[in-house]
Image 1: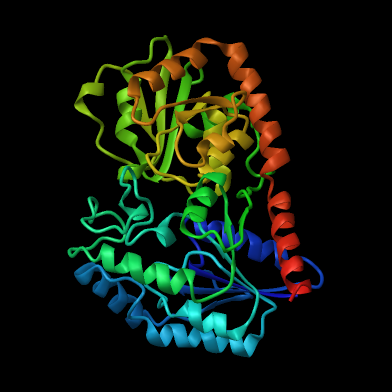
Image 2 (image 1 turned 90 degrees about the vertical axis):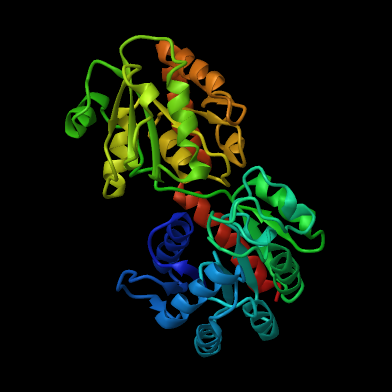
Length: 407
């Protein structure tokens, strides 16, 4: 079976990570051949990967979006190159991941639909549902047609609001022009998709991680390695871009003022940010900065007593799965698909933006060693059972086989 996988980039980012995981797992299986086609970025020079988008068109597409708010236009030649690749390589299934990111025209849907091949489209965010953004935060306009976008500077940044026109174009070109199975990692996003279309098939396949790499380690050993205190409890916050609005880091910092316990500290992983003045003297905070490689990130999770996530918009965050797989309980906001990941025996979730409640949840777990240990055990068991990369791959394989056999 031949699977063509398409994504914005080959490396970096949540969608790329999941797409690459499937590509590499399938490439190891007898009877399968996988090709990873991507649009931009240097990528890794490895067998089975190919960049099809033209760099000049990527820049033009991005400039057009920035200046006019129009998305999915400006990559005409790149889109034609992908269609030619599909015709020449003759895949049994085409699996799209993110199709936004300045490298494909919206016309790709009709062009692929005309080929009559089985298509899977995994949604890693809500971009397909809105007139502009990947995550709509607290805005509800995507349900009724967008327009008057409240967050024009969020990705994809623009200086002109075309969200109402784009909402109509995306509804027509991405929902009516091709027959495909939509996959979402969360029930939360699947339910939103069903609001848009009741005629298309929607499947939920949770994301998977390497539970061997992300495994519990000796806490004292990894703390020594990372230069962290051995005699304090640690609350960890991790995000590639700590300052990104939707990651809600301000609420994490605000919650620390409401923690009522002794001998504890906070640690962040990701691009460093300026700490709020109000936090000075409140607690110790160490910013480890970006960590290189999965092993180092897994060590950071194992060094912590708790992992905190304060996303204001998220689908099925990988950081939560990684923390759970390392046996570290989760505290955070009940947002998006996070409640599907964090069951009651794996952590505590509170209403979004409630910094006081978050601080109280952190306090509760830092004070109760027994409860924290039990939750850590349940986290690891749940991660291995539900989110291991093998289970993740099996679910997609079953879908591929069904589509090919039913063709």
